[in-house]
Image (tube, rainbow, N blue to C red; front, side, top):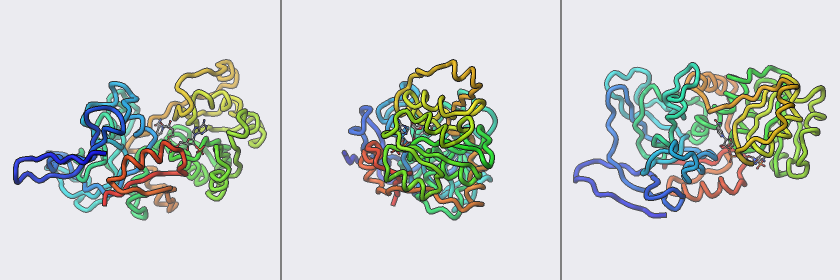
Length: 352
Ligand SMILES: NC(=O)c1ccc[n+]([C@@H]2O[C@H](COP(=O)([O-])OP(=O)(O)OC[C@H]3O[C@@H](n4cnc5c(N)ncnc54)[C@H](OP(=O)(O)O)[C@@H]3O)[C@@H](O)[C@H]2O)c1
């Protein structure tokens, strides 16, 4: 990793940022200096305290979303938390000293998704949270739950909100529903925690027996190794009883969807969240039709949904599962660790 210092005109205050410059790969991540941001009307400046990584951040660095990934130089990583240190003219939503999370989609306040709301996202194409100070519209942040540490609060904007949107905003799960959760990464463990909070019966799959044990300790009612049982669809149906599970948090994509279509009950919902095992769909479409299955795409969520989620997290004193914390300078190592798949829950960064 290169540490690069730009020289600005003497007297111009600067801050440190991590940015991707000169090419799209982790080898092009450098620490650079940029001028300290000044808030314009309606804007605020945050002193960033912590960040957390999502699988998406590793995709962005390789320009995996094509032209939608954004332009270089780009400040990576979508999720973080910071303290409000400056207010632009006309800002009344937040106060100096408030601890807030920048929203993953800062233009999506509420209502239905639109191309403009979904297209403007932090950590690509918009600059992300790996900067000491961050300039953002005051409308694009929400208060972090007070009981959480900085690192815990930094896990919420993408991973937690995606799980919340899947199970609550769109999924509307109810007590007693049977929910299948794939894997034990960031989104999946939030899905497990929310599903338990809402009184659901939960089944978790993982490649690792040790992670399954930890999932049971977190409240999973049943667990299954997708490595030992690659054709797990029937097994899940047997565990769920009846016609199958009511809801599936689908993060695998290509290879897991055929199994999910065996595990889901007629009329159940599969939340389409990730494509970890491949991006194409090779599934028996007849099963979707004849079992009247709902395939619901999820793209994180709105600020309104975040605020509803934050209230529930506060009310239930829920604590995110943090696997490991790296320093600001260790971003490349943190990304490598995430890609290794060794983590259980969230990989985080402190800004120091
Ligand atoms: N649509 C959205 O709004 C949205 C938002 C956030 C994330 N995502 C997507 O959701 C996926 C997960 O993201 P994340 O940030 O939570 O990732 P993560 O923290 O890196 O977790 C990935 C986990 O998925 C599990 N996994 C991998 N392959 C699997 C398979 N074939 N079947 C079941 N589980 C599998 C693994 O669990 P084990 O180690 O236990 O096997 C792995 O630890 C990614 O594809 C990401 O792009 C989408």
